[in-house]
Image (cartoon, rainbow, N blue to C red):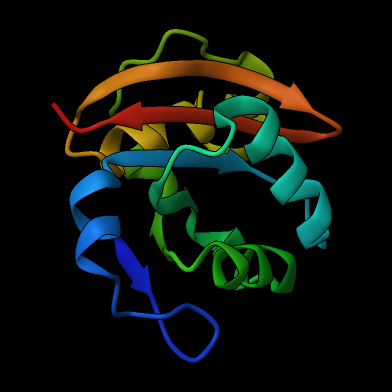
Length: 139
């Protein structure tokens, strides 16, 4: 079962416009202690200024300060999945290296797809300054 993180660092109430327009989920693969600026830059490169519904990642990164700060800056919540949940998702860009290290062949793409309700991948996995980012849209 995915974990949803929302507290003082990630507002829970969204405006009606944001809630309607934001169907884009951004999946992230991060190294420990990744700074918020790097995460925000990677998101901007991948999806521009499109409204984002939430950020999604692996459970072991969800409480990292950089990710929490990025979520708060964007005004979105974080959804986290365990490696077993992520491993069950068919993705465009699986990685044997990630599989060996984390127990799942994908973090960013799989997390984006799961958090979007198995939507459509609209940004395939890409690496921006060490941050792996992908995006999926609800269909």
